[in-house]
Length: 366
Image 1 (cartoon, rainbow, N blue to C red):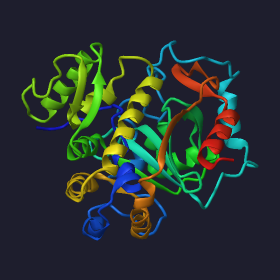
Image 2 (cartoon, rainbow, N blue to C red):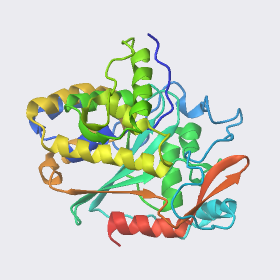
Image 3 (cartoon, rainbow, N blue to C red):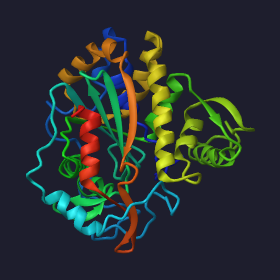
Image 4 (cartoon, rainbow, N blue to C red):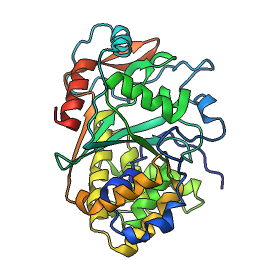
């Protein structure tokens, strides 16, 4: 049965968790390296089907301008709001401040994990999940920085718009440049995944243990029904019955992280980070056979510009990385943003200086 695109937020960076956090089966690496869509060296980015020239089927007008939509579905319930003045000016200033150099540190490795809302990572779509995975050797931490998609900022050569519009305009390369220019951080590589890779990876590690509330049950079940329909399965397959502690399979976990009806976009990204942390912990404890299954399921669905040499280097360092702590957080930080309407769009205007400084401190410890 034909699978249609789903514009959601379950693209949970399993590729990055595998690459930088948990694979211990090093002796099997070369058997699986060829399954990934690798770009020679670390330069450039890989696209297909003219992805960079396509516009969003939903969310952009014909001229590429974002149309009306809610900023992360946050409404007026987001945490403390602070006046930013005119977000249009803030966004432009972020791009014009050329005197600010990108933060760099040879002891920090930054990978941008992009969750594509298309069925396949190489298809057209938006980047509804953007998480910077930073491996800091000095701090012995893996810092996970989530960027909210509705942040209003300057996109190189495309004016001011929502952050996730950058991917639609110019793929991974433009999205990376947009984040680098606005937040003054150096991004080494990217990993792009779709939500089917997420489902397969969660299933491969035996599911995720989560506490599910009564309020969440009907919402999660609707997402499960949708996936059942798309995959030609019985409507009731895998539905949750009552609140409590569950070991959720991939499809059920997808429903949990896709939930956009309870709380704000900040809470939704927090659910994503909860799941990612649990994935991190499970992968660290995985056996060789479980790692093999995970690789078989996930690697063919991942697109990256990480070179084979870099992958080998990361994998040989994984015994050390497994002892690192994970530190999740999100941009914008509390007290540094306001929800505003610009050109009929509900967007998030932020204090770039405050968020740049927080990013620099958390990722580099400077």
